Amino acid sequence: MKPARTPTVLVPIDFSPASGAGLRFALQWASQQRISLVCLHIVYLLRPTSWSDQRYRNYAQAEKKRHFQQLNDFVGKIITQAATGKPDISFVTIEAISPDIALQQYCRRRKDIDYICIGTNGARGLKKLFGTHTGNLITHSNTPVIAIPASYRRSAITRILYASDLADYTPEIQRLIRFAGPLKANVRTLHLNYLGEIWLNEDSLKTVLKHQFHYPVDVSIVHADPNLSVTRNLQRQITAFKPSMVVLYTQHRDSVIQRILYPSVAERLSFQAKTPLLVFPKTGKDSSGAKLSTAKTTALLRAK
Image (cartoon, rainbow, N blue to C red):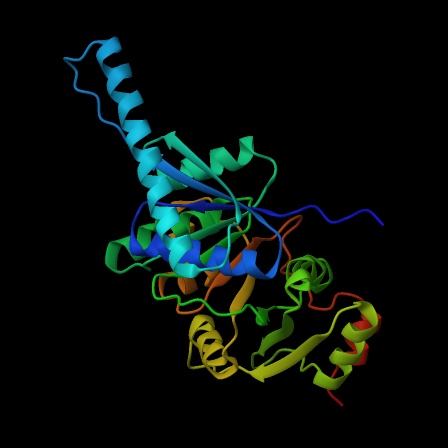
């Protein structure tokens, strides 16, 4: 059997406490599974109009060298505090203006990047409407994004809550198992059932998933409170289950107007995250079709 490729995780570092939290999560992950970490710092340089090209090149070179050393020192200090041993790690500094765009461009150049693990302080007010760097990544990045709250404290990744509309669950769970399997983490699929939807039989769904996947995937089907938003209903379940991390799949929304009027659940959760959040981009066609699309499975799961 061909050995699985070691995942490569991009960890943006801006020397803030939030980026330290993102690194601590990545180090915890590295203590449970062999992964490669790429710690990346973005340098934003201003050029006075009076400077010659040579003067600016000298300045830029010196600043990049200084930031590279600062990156090494920052990461080294957190690794020492974490006491997890020496991870497989590399350091990169790039010059850019917009961090979220620069990170996406870097991932397009580095095809081996599997995840972006980024710390976040959340957002309020206008930032919540127009997006944070993390929110922009979640809604635009083709690379899965792991949003880590600034308050994160290291703990083993053992319990994963996968919130699903069950519209396209087969490839989504398969992809999730590739992430959870090496961590030996338990997976619980959560479906929020709203008034007027087909009620699915929880035991029957467990049987279907048991035969379909060679990995233990638990199931919870919960009546959603119609007076609360999807995000608030989901937060209730997160509080009750206390997972190590939450997993969502989200559709990208390209329009600014779309994002203001219809922000994704994943983006809203990243604004107020208290639990690490892994967001996979949905692929292929819009998955808003009937959940559990095969007629045989749907019939099996109808409430009796």
